[in-house]
Image 1: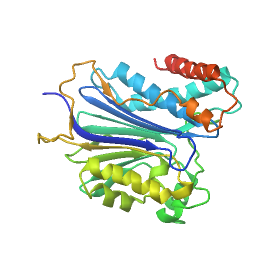
Image 2: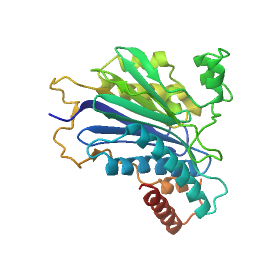
Image 3: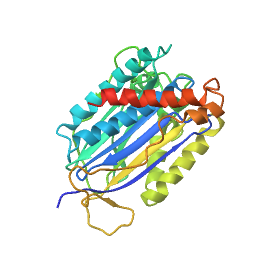
Length: 311
């Protein structure tokens, strides 16, 4: 019988920042799962606009193409990120923005027992197997460059004064570097974790592993979020993660999602965050000059941009 079995957790927090510019979502058909995370960059509301467009465009294109699987997951991942990059530039030109909204992005597709992923920027994917790190993305950042050359350690990178400098993002002035993984077989109990730098920055890989395997996933995951937020302290960034444990066994587990009941063309998804919580940003005086009507118009403009680039 077709279908998938997995356990999944997601959470996103503001940390010590006024506004959360991270966006996350997962959505699945009977035989394919998409997880996506975007970490908006820049001041005011530009970052959350970029992250929202990225996540929604991924989700809407997935619903169009996963029937019930994607014909070519790598092509889907790369093409969607390119569309997001183009859409953000178009949005900025159409509304005469001084700066184009920008975002990092990491996305992964799981289907037919394989995982495929892509990223731009320093939002990460980790793949763990039996308590060991099997694979992870490589940040498009200055500190990653320094680590690759053995000039700084992972712990030093976490507190490096230029740790936020990245050379690839969606919506930037130059075309993004988009890295694709290899097609990777998933074994029973493998764990895929995607996260923003507000999560991995305070949590070295060894600490992630220690916490991840200290308890069942749906207990360990919120504990990890609390630990990462605590470690971030008063300067802590927005922090977000989606964590999925792959299950091929038929063990009765109330935590496990089973997709075999979905019909072809049917999808299940998390409740995506509202299209940019500009009302919250206004209260925090980031965009205090906007009226309620202008906020509504901004939301409509974002939705219009997504519609133009999803096909």
